[in-house]
Amino acid sequence: VGGFASGELMIPRRTWETFSWPEAYNRSNQLEGIQDILTALVAVQKQWPDQPVILAGLGESGLLAAFAAAVYGRCEQVFIDLHRTDPGSDSELQDLLPVGSIKRVGDFRTAMLMLMRGQISLYNASPTFDGQWYRDQAVRLGLAGNIDFRLDEQLNWLNGNL
Image 1 (cartoon, rainbow, N blue to C red):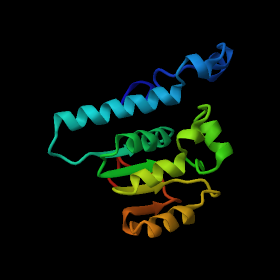
Image 2: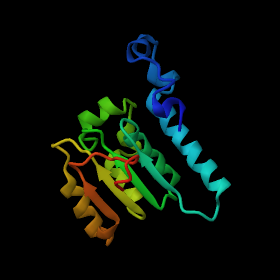
Image 3: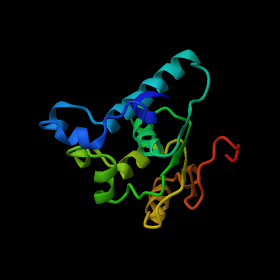
């Protein structure tokens, strides 16, 4: 997916911070990226309605792909590159996804819980990422087989390592 999700049309952070009340009147690069991915998911499903939808979020778009897939709700499989981050940490999530009141609608943990109905593979996490919390939740939900952790590996879609 091109556009905001790939970083091609992003507003530089310094420019964003010069806007008056940017969070109130302008959608952030990250929200635009989530919308791009969500739009692509809907378009793919309409084009190939009988095929499973599989989403791979690479690099900085991994977090955006996770949120888009959670909203979409119909991905059979989602590969998420955490890009050496820990979006389960509130302070780090705020830096990665600077959206006011994101916790009111749900955070990364909420997105993961929504995705557990399908297959999820998480890659390339920060050493502080608490994979055990996600494993415990999957077990509680009876969905332990739906999560694949490869937290120390990079998601390498092009080389066919999936």
